[in-house]
Amino acid sequence: MLDDFFFRAMLAGVGLALITGPIGCFIVWRRMAYFGDTMAHSALLGVGLAMLFDLNIMISVFVIAFTIAMLLVVLQKRHTLSADSLLGILSHATLAFGLVLVAFMSWIRFDLMSLLFGDILAVSVSDLIAIYAGGTLILAVLIKLWRPLLAATISEDIARAEGLQPELHRTLFMILLALLIAIAMKIVGILLITALLIIPAATARRFALSPEQMAIYAAFIGVCSVIAGLFGSLNYDTPSGPSIVVASVIFFAISMLPWQKLKTSLPSARHKEPTS
Image 1 (cartoon, one colour):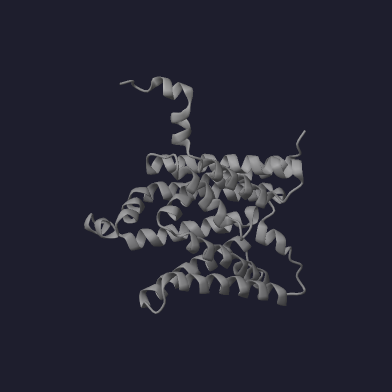
Image 2: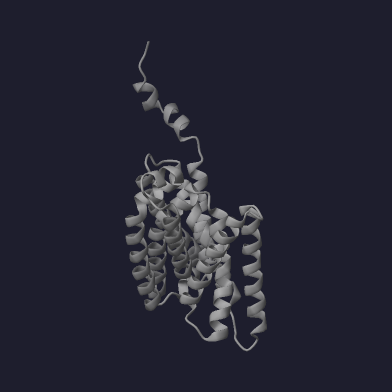
């Protein structure tokens, strides 16, 4: 029989997958993968500052991630550097500053591997409460913002013409993403958060016929990745966080198969084809 810690890990992973699926769809649609990576890397700086000033880690990570997002918006408006260059600078700078800050605090013992790659098997009941409470809030706000965000994703000019506020909605989306990163950091780690956001959504895109369908499929694929990854980790004694990401990569690889060609090559499909 499986231990309680494994069930807590399963519940935590499933709860996280239900959030990352819909959020990840907008990351894919808006081509914000590198942006999400930058915010995730800033989490280590948030952890270091929380330890240095004795702050709540989740709140500190949220504040730093959101601050980096706002800083990027301000720098982009100056048009001094391209967006990808700014993202590269901020991504590596925050990660490097975080690592240096952690190294300076020799009086505090850090499990750097768990920060970078997560430790889902160490999830506590209080962590579960934070995941599901924060996840419910994120999904509720995302549902409220779904139509405006979707319209702005298609065309910001059209969204403005319809009386919407793309800048405000983009800022609110950044807040949701920062909150998600703060919640997810302990589970899958800083380096794997973006993978869990992007890969299930990219997989779902192969099969979905509508944005809403893609969000549902992405959440379902994420849940399947969590379950497969955790059981794979249990059976093969591999790290849990990376195992979840590997499982999601396998699902993505399966989705890349030429399913339409396979379908038409089946005997039943050939049998139903009209004859001349």
